[in-house]
Length: 305
Image (cartoon, rainbow, N blue to C red; front, top):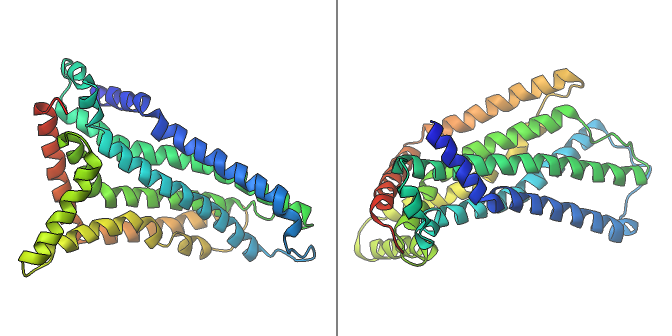
């Protein structure tokens, strides 16, 4: 366990750009564009200052802001995970740093598992944390806009909606990590095997195999398998993030947080249950485990690009 924690720290220090700096830069970019749009386009907004913001409208606006920010972060997160998975085992062969790490008393399994955990756990959690801070600033900017139009200043600050949305987004990220595990395992296998470009290898092989299956075989099993993997790239949106948040119980105070948390928990368990009881997912996950096992073997035998 100590070796695994040390390797996770190593992955963090060597990949701080994709794990921390990219989401932080994205957060600053979103905030800067929001401020710029307020400065340039505020006078052109068609807002009636006498419009009364009801609790329902405020809840919908708060949810829209939080989920809108999370959607942008998730797109960048998927790109970061893909890039990291494709380069994790390739770059260390390219710069020969693998020779140093192989000289240490560390198992190949721990090495690969540390990279897998970094891709599916550490990177999403870091992105989620940065997303929370960014969403708070976005709500603050929205509050300023409401104040300038004569609407209630604190209308958007509903603790139940904010915390339940954050929790819901976190659970969806967990669901997404489970869903894309086979694809990440395939990328890591290509990263361990490729001599030049893991990306081209990861894309060309499935395309060629699907075409050959379509031309030569009477069934289309591989094509359905590949399409099933791509569907999980969009599981974050298919799970309908806003559905359970907007249906949360209309209460105020601490009770709202508890009630909405229970609602979110039940909804999340339903989605996890649907994924984990699907035979297609377990077939995909089993193939993903095989990919990881092959990547471990290749890392032990393939030292150079």
